[in-house]
Amino acid sequence: MNHFISATDVTSIQQLVDNALQYKLNPFLDAQLGKGKRIGLLFLNPSLRTRLSTQVAAANLGMEAIVFNVDKEGWALEFQEGAVMNGTTVEHIKDAAPVLGQYFDILAIRTFPALKNRADDYSEMFIKQFIRFAGVPVVSLESATLHPLQSLTDIITIQESIKQIGAMHKPKVVLTWAPHIKPLPQCVANSFAQWVNAWGNANFVITHPKGYELAEQFTNGATIIHEQEEALKNADFVYVKNWSSYEQYGEILPANTNWMLTNEKLAFTNQAKIMHCLPVRRNIELSDEILDGPNSLVTQQAGNRVWAAQAVLAAILNTLNQSNEPTDHC
Ligand code: CP
Image (cartoon, rainbow, N blue to C red):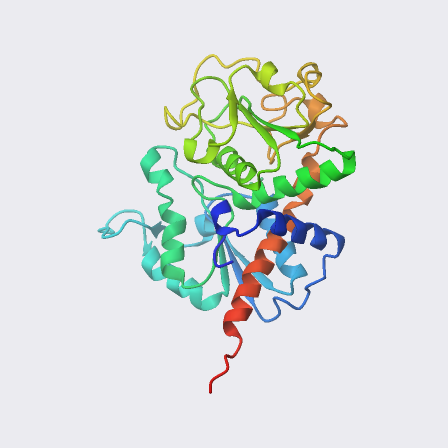
């Protein structure tokens, strides 16, 4: 694997999931793989799980991880080609990224969308500029439109839970929109849809109020149902997440009451396991009774972030190590 930005960077999702579950059984299986290598974790936005799980994963592989909170500690970066830098930005990505590529063997970057201009956000300019100018593999720690480490984690969690509950059929997985007080990115929902569709081992349903349709490039393959109770029927897994409107870009639409998941709604499901990427606004996005109840997978899911990150870093390290192997010359 060269870069990890999207499901399309992965040859076999199932292989990556299996590798991650191997690491969960034996965290130090490849403790020498990253010896002498460094990863730079660059944050332009806050994080708890992504930052710490990736640091733990790197340590398990023998790598050194250095965190740089670019938003608080770095120079304000400019990403526009040809920018006349007479405003607040101090350093162009064309200058900063190659320097970072000199310091690190892998760069990992978190950046959120501005949610002002859909075309700008969906162009993924920030992460593409890092790839273009850094000269080393780039891992997305969440970008403007996708959160691939989260989605890999989610599939790992579904797979291990299927084994635990012994389901014989393809699980019904429902992604449900939930309320929130702030406009949030579509990244987690886009990415979950992209990965579940690419994985192909679930009957996948998305439910949301009208007006919250996600980009078809990610949802193609899923069944869309606008009545939440109908969608929840016989669900084995329910993934709860808020996102702002894609059509009326970045907006919260009026009159979306009664979409928070409760035990009353859980009764429509097949005793579904409940997932959320965290952080979660309790009793707005998801009820206490669900989060504190026996069906919640959220802590197990967040714990699995380590194994997802470890599987991805190992795949990139294997590619790096292969490219550094001496070739035979005759
Ligand atoms: N789920 C997730 O990405 O959590 P953090 O924002 O805390 O990293």
